[in-house]
Image: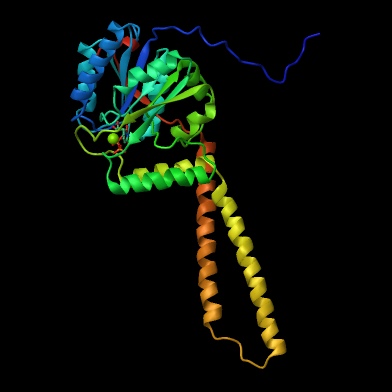
Length: 339
Ligand code: UDP
Ligand code: MG
C-alpha cells in the first residue's frame, strides 16, 4: 500500500565545504555614480587578491543591483561589465527600495557564498576576508557588526541605538549595530528563498534562519562620495517595517491601554457616585468631563491607526505583488555582454 505523507521532507545535506568558494558580492545601488568607480576599483582588486591567495575561486564576481537609478549608474555598470569579467549587473525596472534590491541580488547571484554590502564604501571591504575565514570555520551566516559609528552623525547614532533597544524590548531578534553587511552560504540563501513576505526587513529575517553564525567587527567609515539615499522618510518606513513585521506588541499594547482606561473610568464613576450619595458637594466642573473625552478620543484614534497599519499589511500581502521586476542583466555570469 502506498503511504500518503502529509508533508515531504526537503532536507538536503549541505554541499561538502569547499575551501575555495565562488564568492559573489551583492551591492544595491541607487544613484551611486559618484562612488561606483572607486567601489569597483577596490572590489575588483579585492577579488583578484582573494583569488591569488586561493581564498576565493575563479568566477567570483561583483553583482550591482541598480535600483531604478536616474543618473549614470546603470551606464557605468554596463561599461564595467563589458570590460571587466568580475563585474555583473542587474537592473530593476524602477526604484523598489534598498531591501527589495538587495533581495533581488541575493536571489539572482550565483556562487557558493554571497556577501551583501552597501555601494558607498561605508562597509569596510577589508572585513570580507575575515568573514570568509569565519565561513571556512563552518559558519553559514556571518554578520559584520559596526564596532564604532563615529562616521555617523550624533542624531543617527542616538536614534539607531534607541531603535535597536526598542526592537530588543519588543522581542524582535536583531543584532546590535548590524545592518545588511553580511555573508550567507548557499544553503542559507536557499532557506531565505522560502520566506515570501511582502514587507522586507532582512536584518530581522535572517536571524530567524538559524544555522551556525559568527560575528565580525568592522569600523564604519564615512560615505566615500555622494549623499545618503536613505532620507528620514525611508529610514522611518524601514524602522516601522522592522516593528510591524516581527511583533504584534503594539496591538497588545492597545489592549492594555484600553483595559487601564476602562478600569480608571470605572473607578472614576464609583468616586462620582460616592460624592453624589454621601456628600453634599456639587460635582466638579466641565474639565473632568471634557479632558478625559479628548484623551480617550486621542487614544482611540491612535489605536485605530495602529490597527489600520497592520490591516494594511495584511491587505498588501494578500495581493502577493512581485517585489521587483528585472529589466536587464549584464555580465559574464548571465551570458550577457552589455546593455
Ligand atoms: N539604496 C538602494 N535603493 C534605495 C536607497 C538606497 O538600493 O532606494 C542603496 C544605496 O545605493 C546604498 C545602500 O542602499 O548602496 C545604502 O544606502 P545609503 O548609503 O544611502 O544609506 P545610509 O548609509 O545613509 O543609511
Ligand atoms: Mg551609506
